[in-house]
Image 1 (cartoon, rainbow, N blue to C red):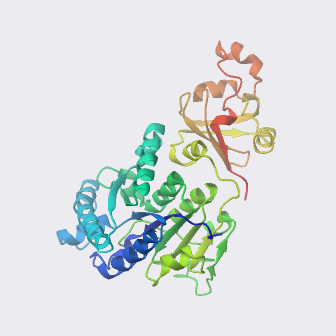
Image 2: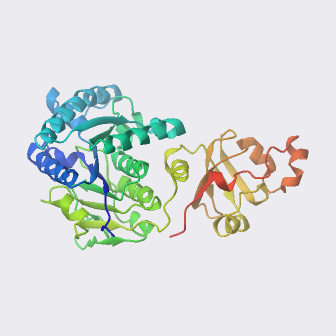
Length: 371
């Protein structure tokens, strides 16, 4: 599987590069940098997604615990981000490797234009043999600080640049059949082919220094695998972990990708856009969508939730409430409510017009295969 790995995204968690006192673990950072620099010197392209800005800021300011208010967290992150980048730049320079700081927010990737601009910038940096060091822009990104989502960010970046592998380094050896902190019989899972089978059992707590946990890692795995990218969760404290992962050695838990990789537009629809509503469909519509590749017609819609305008992204769910896809709606929520269950021919009588036969055109619809 890893014979032709040329582009890798490595995500480093807070607990991997900091001590419990919030100070940066320079020895471990140096080791990880050395491995990444070795890969780039061998002709590979590496994007580093790093956490640790808030912890670095806490240490520099002499704080013993994370602040409670959002402005305080963002201020601490502003201090720490500069410090973190300074350390990385110094360490990479020892191996002759140039780096670039890239700060992103989800909003940067929700806009199709900004999504493409971000992609082009990252690809150009890789063409220059530069290692992009990516982090969520903590000083303005409310969602990251509130939910801790650099795991998801790393998967979005991997999909953005079309990576061949996503390596998520954490303070755990991988995914277990149950929470190993509570169940002594929990077993490490080597290979995951069905994410949902393990999602509930794995537990969701993160470390005290970070804000991510296993829940966000599963979300990252869904994004990576649906984008055709294998993902590995491994312990960042293991010597040679990056080299071993790239070589295909057994270093943690491997999530196998789906066979069909989504194209760039479909990936943007599936993962980067914010859904503003939900549309439920009957079994006939589900079959037409999933098996025949049809567009979603109003006749197959049973329920509408949320407030969305024409052109907004919505989640498509089956009769059991399971998400089967996402797409751009041709009609606003109140219009879909009126035309649901009706044939397209009667739309002029209901709405006074018929802009489209379909509520979601298949070209603006991305479907998720059932596991």
